[in-house]
Amino acid sequence: MITFTQGFPFSPLPLGHYRSMMTNSPYERHIDFETLIAPETPFESWLISMPEFQAGYNWGLPRFGHPEGKVGIHVKEVLGNIDKLSIDSISRQQLRIVALSHDTFKYKENKRLNGHEYKHHGLLAREFMERYYDDKVVLDIVELHDEAFYIWRAANLENKCEAAATRLKNLLDRIGPHLGLYFQFFKSDTQTGDKMQAPIHWFEQRLRDIGTKI
Ligand SMILES: [Fe+2]
Ligand SMILES: [Fe+2]
Image 1: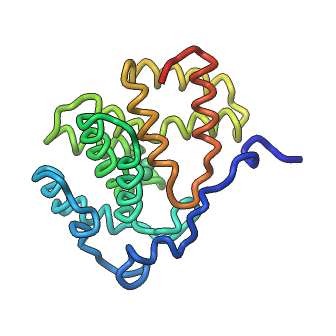
Image 2: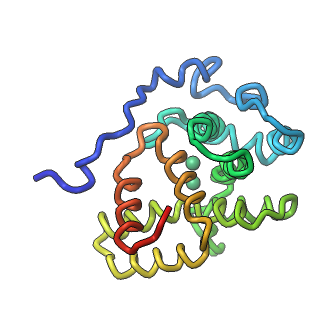
């Protein structure tokens, strides 16, 4: 039986696609991502130079969804997707800041709680970014960037339709009129590596079902 999630293709990008971005190997210990990312503003350049960003971009080994391994290479791919969008320059600038920061703090996310409070890397990124940046729309998207995926997963893989509906309502309440920008980022982030594309189609259809324009 073909399930809904199997009905959409995986991203067609083979590992070889990333070879030009990997100076030696995906296991190389430390890459200075300033050259690869090519910052467009002093703020972008300053962010990438921060020790937290250098550590965050260098975190990650090749794994399901992320054959590229390091977060910095994923960020480069998301920025490339943003460049393909038909959006105004302010939206592009906002999405670039989201892209640069959204996954940076995966290296600090503690999934083995050991008595500590769990914080998703999106929330960790928001807490860091709000010290230097005050665009609430950008900060909200940074914090909630994986929420659409978790809602899809709850509804389609975990059989938690009620919880998914509540979570979707909460997301829509938080993002408000900026859902279009949120969705553009969700697409740019998901059309990377070998991630499943089903969450994009499912999320877009749910929004249509409830009459939300994106
Ligand atoms: Fe993420
Ligand atoms: Fe990401």
